[in-house]
Image (cartoon, rainbow, N blue to C red):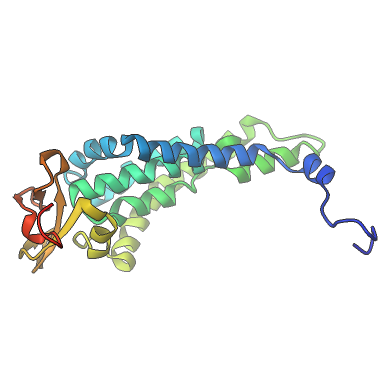
Length: 238
């Protein structure tokens, strides 16, 4: 550098003194939790339970429930940890319910940003709390809660309606389970040339979720009809 000729721009003593290594632990721990959810099969089990109520709720109520739960959980477990743990569960729930994954993933992803009440809710809050120690009067937990509660209440009232509306207009979240999602599910989903009505739409083909617990030769349509999956699997029987 011009101010310190012959020395590096960034030195280890400078990093050690000024960098908050707690952020690395927060992010790394969140990724480890997500991997554990997937490897243990917990995301699939929780997704099966969640799928049972997805179809029974109106769109706005479903968006509100998802966003309220994710937002409250993010206040305690951090937005990164909740996103890493909850998104795979909701993706599994969408597959089991044979509904568009964006219907569940979009509100959950947006809600992970509603972290206003606790300093541990997001890395940004941690940085603000840490830098406030340099002020004459540092921020306290009550300061975060006092400012964050009104914001959380307002977002919980307005955001579900906006996400529901914009999701349908921009991302077509009200459409049937899309082919790209079925392809992303791998062996857990096949695309069946079966015409019918799915979520109020007339379709010539639709997704069929393979029931691995029944041997993998049977799949379930959106209306919960079980059909033989063997003719729809590339390369022959499962």
